[in-house]
Image (cartoon, rainbow, N blue to C red; front, side, top):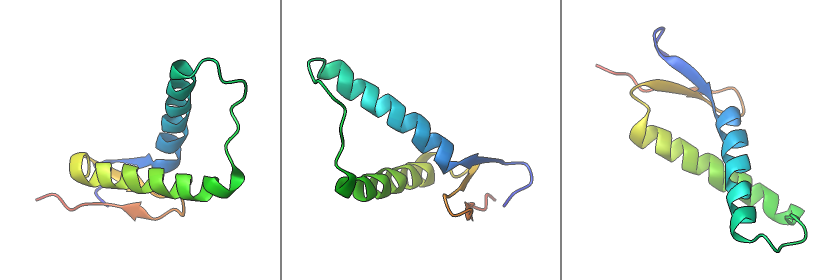
Length: 80
Protein backbone atom coordinates (compact mmCIF):
# COMPACT_ATOMS: atom_id res chain seq x y z
CA UNK A 1 0.00 0.00 0.00
CA UNK A 2 1.33 3.39 -0.94
CA UNK A 3 1.44 6.11 1.72
CA UNK A 4 0.20 8.81 -0.66
CA UNK A 5 -2.79 6.94 -2.12
CA UNK A 6 -6.25 7.15 -0.65
CA UNK A 7 -7.76 3.90 0.65
CA UNK A 8 -11.40 3.62 -0.37
CA UNK A 9 -13.79 1.22 1.36
CA UNK A 10 -15.68 -1.11 -0.96
CA UNK A 11 -18.45 -1.20 1.67
CA UNK A 12 -19.08 2.53 1.19
CA UNK A 13 -19.03 2.18 -2.60
CA UNK A 14 -21.45 -0.75 -2.50
CA UNK A 15 -23.86 1.00 -0.10
CA UNK A 16 -24.05 4.08 -2.32
CA UNK A 17 -24.21 2.03 -5.53
CA UNK A 18 -27.04 -0.15 -4.23
CA UNK A 19 -29.11 2.88 -3.22
CA UNK A 20 -28.60 4.39 -6.66
CA UNK A 21 -29.36 1.11 -8.41
CA UNK A 22 -32.62 0.46 -6.59
CA UNK A 23 -33.75 4.07 -6.98
CA UNK A 24 -33.36 3.64 -10.76
CA UNK A 25 -35.35 0.39 -10.67
CA UNK A 26 -38.17 2.20 -8.83
CA UNK A 27 -37.94 5.16 -11.20
CA UNK A 28 -38.50 2.90 -14.21
CA UNK A 29 -41.08 0.66 -12.54
CA UNK A 30 -43.12 3.20 -10.57
CA UNK A 31 -46.28 1.10 -10.35
CA UNK A 32 -44.57 -1.60 -8.27
CA UNK A 33 -46.25 -1.88 -4.89
CA UNK A 34 -43.30 -3.22 -2.90
CA UNK A 35 -39.54 -3.47 -3.04
CA UNK A 36 -39.10 -7.05 -1.93
CA UNK A 37 -35.98 -8.99 -2.96
CA UNK A 38 -35.79 -12.74 -2.22
CA UNK A 39 -33.35 -13.49 0.61
CA UNK A 40 -32.03 -16.55 -1.25
CA UNK A 41 -30.80 -14.24 -4.04
CA UNK A 42 -29.11 -11.72 -1.75
CA UNK A 43 -25.75 -13.52 -1.49
CA UNK A 44 -25.35 -13.89 -5.26
CA UNK A 45 -26.35 -10.21 -5.72
CA UNK A 46 -23.81 -9.04 -3.12
CA UNK A 47 -21.07 -11.21 -4.62
CA UNK A 48 -21.79 -10.00 -8.15
CA UNK A 49 -21.72 -6.29 -7.30
CA UNK A 50 -18.58 -6.68 -5.18
CA UNK A 51 -16.81 -8.46 -8.05
CA UNK A 52 -18.03 -5.78 -10.47
CA UNK A 53 -16.58 -2.98 -8.32
CA UNK A 54 -13.27 -4.80 -7.88
CA UNK A 55 -13.03 -5.36 -11.65
CA UNK A 56 -13.90 -1.72 -12.37
CA UNK A 57 -11.36 -0.52 -9.77
CA UNK A 58 -8.68 -2.76 -11.29
CA UNK A 59 -9.34 -1.48 -14.83
CA UNK A 60 -9.94 2.19 -14.04
CA UNK A 61 -8.79 3.37 -10.62
CA UNK A 62 -6.14 1.02 -9.23
CA UNK A 63 -3.36 3.42 -10.22
CA UNK A 64 -4.89 6.17 -8.06
CA UNK A 65 -6.62 4.39 -5.15
CA UNK A 66 -6.20 1.40 -2.88
CA UNK A 67 -9.38 -0.60 -2.20
CA UNK A 68 -10.34 -2.02 1.19
CA UNK A 69 -12.47 -5.14 0.84
CA UNK A 70 -15.26 -6.22 3.20
CA UNK A 71 -12.87 -8.50 5.12
CA UNK A 72 -10.36 -5.67 5.67
CA UNK A 73 -7.90 -6.78 3.00
CA UNK A 74 -6.48 -3.82 1.09
CA UNK A 75 -5.93 -4.22 -2.64
CA UNK A 76 -3.12 -2.09 -3.96
CA UNK A 77 -1.36 -1.80 -7.27
CA UNK A 78 2.26 -0.72 -7.29
CA UNK A 79 2.71 2.26 -9.57
CA UNK A 80 6.14 2.83 -11.13
